[in-house]
Structures are given as C-alpha cells and as structure tokens.
Image (tube, rainbow, N blue to C red):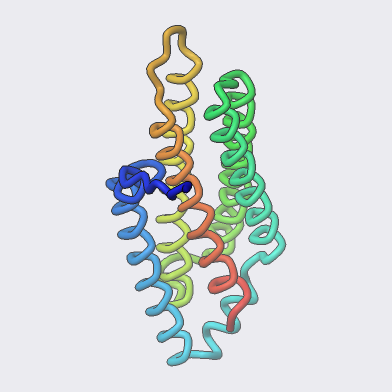
Length: 193
C-alpha cells in the first residue's frame, strides 16, 4: 500500500524561506492598509479623486503592468531552469526579468517627469499624495528587486557557485511580490474613481 509522505520541511519552509514570506506579508499589509485609506478618502472627495485620476496616464500604467507580468513569467521560468540545473538558461531568464524591471523604471520615470513638469506633487491634493507615496514606495521595491536579481544572477553564474534553490526562490518571491503590489495599485489608482 502506498502512503503519502508529507515533507514537513516544505510546510514550515515555503519557497524562499519563512523570513521572506513574513516580509512579503508585512509589505502586503502595509500596501493594503494604504489602499483602504485611499478608497476611504476617495469616497470623501469623489470629484477631486475622479478629476485627479483623469490626469494619470492609463496607457503607461497598462504597459507597466505588461512589463511586470512578463518579467514575472520570466522569473518563474528562471527558477524552473535553475531547479533543472540549467544555469545558463536560468541566467538568461534572470536577465529578461531584469529587462522588464528596467523598462518599468524607465516608463515610470517618464510618467513622474510629466507629473513634475505639470506641477503635480504630493501637495496637489489627497489623491496625488497617495499616488506619489504608493507608487514611489512600490518603485523602491522594484529597485530593491532589481538589486536582488543582479546579485543572485551574479552569484549563481560564478565559478563554484554556492547559490542554492532557496536563494533563487527567495529572489523570485520578492519579485512576484512587486508584481502583486502593482496589480493592486494599477486598478486602484488608475481605473477606479
């Protein structure tokens, strides 16, 4: 009779490690609370939020969504290739992931530049206070994610690398968190109100 064996290590140590998941949950809670506050204030000043939202570039937001989702796919593929011991292919997909993140940064920077040129700042109104704080905080996470990607890719391609699957999974978990946060920010900021 075949019995199903449960690997308890995997239950208590999710991909990337428990510490990474604690960080991810804390970040999601932080962004979630800010988005709840955004919606609350949006109901207090619906006309201001509607007019402000119309000043956002939804095309840029949608393209950035595509950049991050595509880079998330490449990240998942990189992990798969790493687990298959195909370091060269994994590194290739790491680089495609980084390209998606870089394209996101470039387009977000162009959007920020346009806002600054239009004199839209934190002080413009409550909507733009949330816009700047939420998107800048997310942008910092994307930059941190890119640094982690670069470091992990460098480590795994070195001769006699000691990069473990857990390291690559932690990197992927952080990157996917950036994707998930953007998937919450984009519709809330760019499409609602």
